[in-house]
Image 1 (cartoon, rainbow, N blue to C red):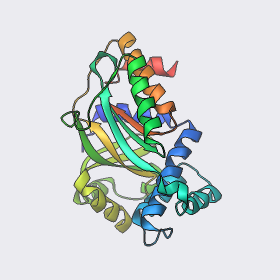
Image 2 (cartoon, rainbow, N blue to C red):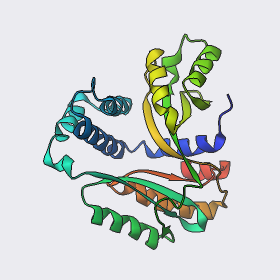
Image 3 (cartoon, one colour):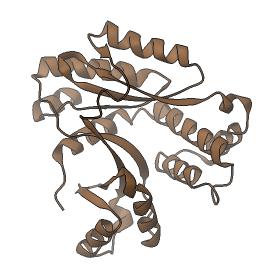
Amino acid sequence: MAGHSKWANIKHRKAAQDKKRAKVWTRIIKEITIAARDGGPDPDSNPALRLAIQNAKGANMNKDTMERAIKKGSGSEAANLQTLTYEGYAPHGIAIFIEATTDNLNRTVASVRSIFTKNGGTLGTNGSLSFIFDTKGVFTINNSALEGKDEEELELEFIDGGAEDIERDEEITSIYTSFDDYGNMQKKLAELNIEAQSTEIQQIPKTTTKLEAEEAKDVLSIIDKFEEDDDVQAVYHNLEFTEELSKLIEE
């Protein structure tokens, strides 16, 4: 099954950012806390919490930190947490989709608006980018979890579970599903006894936009500022990653 290189480029960009472990853990702790708040502290009866814990393990989070996040879900602080999204444009017309979790809506919207304004971007209205992004389920699996399994048979099983695209490199396999098939793929992986490193709902661009290196650096700069904000959980965009741009990031 052919992979989509434009998605892989975004994935690699995200992987580079995810090396900032403190930020990753902050994001996952919020996921665990909200899941425990909304569905209870028992992962056996709370699928959302079970998945959040799975993602935490994939990020090498220790057990004590996970347990504190679960306990936090029953406290007053968790009751004030809200999840929300923002949409807008970075410089040079690149679309930006932001997911945030906050206990102070005014603080978060002010921060997001300020980053857009001070870096040549524009905050738009929710739904304004629906023609640019698709909501997809994304499952990331370490290839070591697939050892000993027939690759062609696995591919057929993944398709049966709702896979629309499968990407594989030396270390990981990424499976993309429609939003509606997200739960079906979870069940399929459980049936195959395959544990994903992470499972997420992501905003995947339908098409990407190529920029010259200097213009692209302006976009990367504003993305970095969003990702540094403690309330921001994830940032998606439709910038195309060229080989030249990848080299600039690595420098």
